Length: 165
Length: 70
View 1 (tube, each protein chain N blue to C red):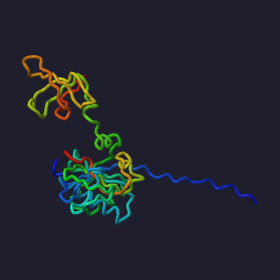
View 2: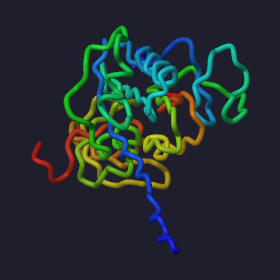
View 3: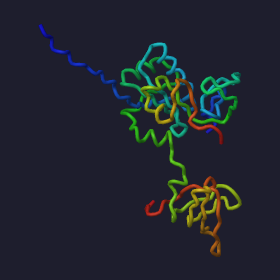
View 4: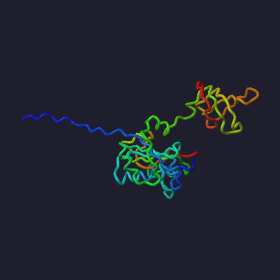
């Protein structure tokens, strides 16, 4: 009697989702450590916990589902609840690995000088030296055409070229 | 954002792993260089399945800083 071969069943692991948990401000790290302890003790399928300085009062949990998150945060001090929905991977990627300013910068962008003798001055980018990590600026407030070259760490973008804001 | 810096940890300059202040050698990479200036935290529990760990190049479970130094 010949038996038909049993089809191999591939178990597809659930795609991880990112949930934002609201916490007391300045307690994000403590909550993250407590969630880690809960996940390990209860053997919950939580893959990672992220505390981003830009997201004050929130931590992000990478888990397979909402029920896992609720189980992990149940009874924890400093947890104020959960933000509805999930965080898109693209948005989290930007927070975890922000692009360096020199890559975003374009000629014609309006910037503010944040360090050095010209601190506080507004200027327009006229040239970018990506190898040296320097930018050449045309200072707005100067009474005559005044160009200076400063390290990219000394500036912040005020207005991108082509944007109406 | 100094509020993000938990006082009990220091970060390995080489692999960004967070260790207790009394430890002298990084348990992840073996480095002896640490910084007390670190920001953000990533706790990796399952590096094989975590998308965050893959993005940041983390292969071992543990606590890591997002940014080390000024």
